[in-house]
Amino acid sequence: MDIEQKQAELIDHFVKKASAQVGSAIGAVIVEATSHASLFAFSEILAVPTVAELEGTENSVYLEVLRVFAHGTWSDYKSNSGSLPQLLPDQVLKLKQLTVLTLAETNKVLPYDQLMLELDVTNVRELEDFIINECIYAGIVRGKLDQLRRCFEVQFAAGRDLRPGQLGSMIQTLSNWLGTSDNLLISIQEKIKWADTMSELDKKQRKEVEDKVEEVKKSVAVKVG
Image (cartoon, rainbow, N blue to C red; front, side, top):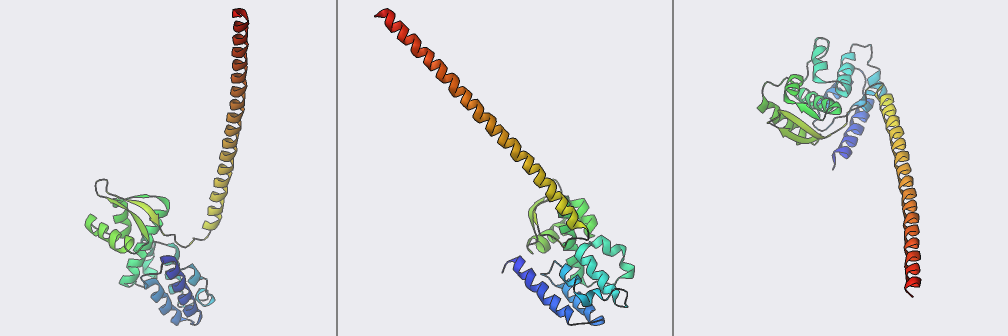
């Protein structure tokens, strides 16, 4: 089973489970979902009505935790840890994995120093073990660890949940790319047309030269005769 299919099945499982619960019982579902080793997308669970209804209640901290897992990083959690429940070890691991995915969204070369700072890792060996065992083997990233340059070169990273407002930005980026592609296509077409025109001119000039050569040959033949 590929990672996308497994994600879809897990999301469906937890959406149904959260839909059947209310109040503090949803908190247990959120803890289970954010601790699951193979689940990396949470926006669908956030959208479940019974989960959204936690807003403003005594159980709203679980909603905030779920939001961190959907859109945030380990640093975001630490900044708000005073008002959030303490995470289980599996949740800490999950959030650090998600942090790597967030960093890989904007930069395909991740310096070791940046990764160690963001992940609270104290040495290179621990960092490389984390990247290999918890990220590459988990199938969420692919890349190369460069010990000489002290960086992780990202070749692939799984996408995270879209943050609020990010869809509009992505649509604008795509529109800009399409506009650039259209302009590039027009430029290529113009170059092809120009090349075709030059080719026709070249053929015409070649024909004129060949005709003149033939005329000279005929003239020479007449004089010799």
